[in-house]
Structures are given as structure tokens and as C-alpha cells.
Image 1 (cartoon, rainbow, N blue to C red):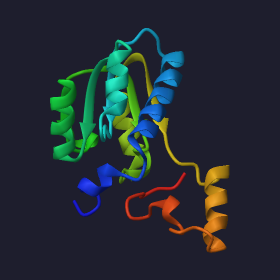
Image 2 (image 1 turned 90 degrees about the horizontal axis):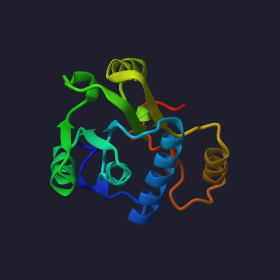
Image 3 (image 1 turned 120 degrees about the horizontal axis):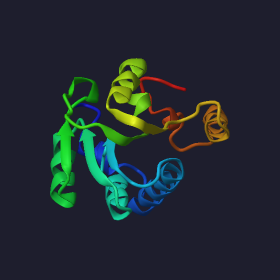
Image 4 (image 1 turned 120 degrees about the vertical axis):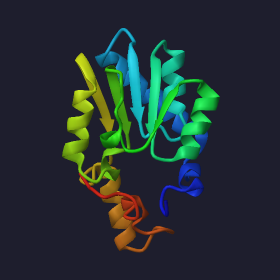
Length: 167
């Protein structure tokens, strides 16, 4: 509750950039899984990925831990939404695709989380995950800038207040 409040979901990233990222993720997902089927977006946040998936013909469901976000997406998109941690939910459906965009680094136990995701897939289904790479060029540059005190908000890229794991 102290981390995932209204300010967290407002975020620093402009909505247009979040939509662009969601479209990029969906492009990559559809190269791996076509035709569209039933998609579960875990960590649905503002619902941009779900909205884009629905426009592309996917049947959509979402999960988020923040009740306000769940209700907002339910009203906006009219889709089935679940509140809570996916590991604790009894979801009745099996999915063709599960998306986790910047979620895995927030989980208490990534192995148990992914094991639960696998039980929710239909045969031939896929989990599409995006998460920060601390060894990647982007993080290495930001780390250097932080060490040299050249960032206005040093070390922010690690988001240590809510990232429990670094990959």
C-alpha cells in the first residue's frame, strides 16, 4: 500500500510512450502467437496493453494488485479483471498468452510466480515477459551517470523501493 498508491500508477512516463511500448510488446507477442486468443495481462496498471490487445482481436482479462486500477480498467474496457497477487487467485480460465511487462522484478518469489503462470496456460500457450536488464547498456549508462553524480535523480533506475529482484 505504501508503494503502489495513486502516484505510482501515474508514473513518470508519458501516456503516449506507454502506449507505444504496449504496441511494440503486442507486435512481438503476435509474431510468436497468432491468431489471437485469450490473453491475461498480469500487472495491468493503466490497461494500455489490454486496450491494444482488444483492438487486435484478443479476448482480454487482467490482474492488478491495486483495486482502484482494477475498477478503472473494468469500467474503461469492460473486461474481466482480478484483484490480488496471481499466486493467490483461483482463475477459472486457461490462457493462450500471459503478458508480464515489468512485473517479474516486483514479485516476492519469481520462481513460484512463473510456475503459477505456467499452470494457467493452454497447451501451446506462451508467457511474454519484459523486465529490466541490469547488465544492459541502458542500466550501465545510468549507473555510470549516477556514480559521477550527473543524474538529477541518481540510482532511480534501480527503483529499489519496489523492485525486489534484479536480473
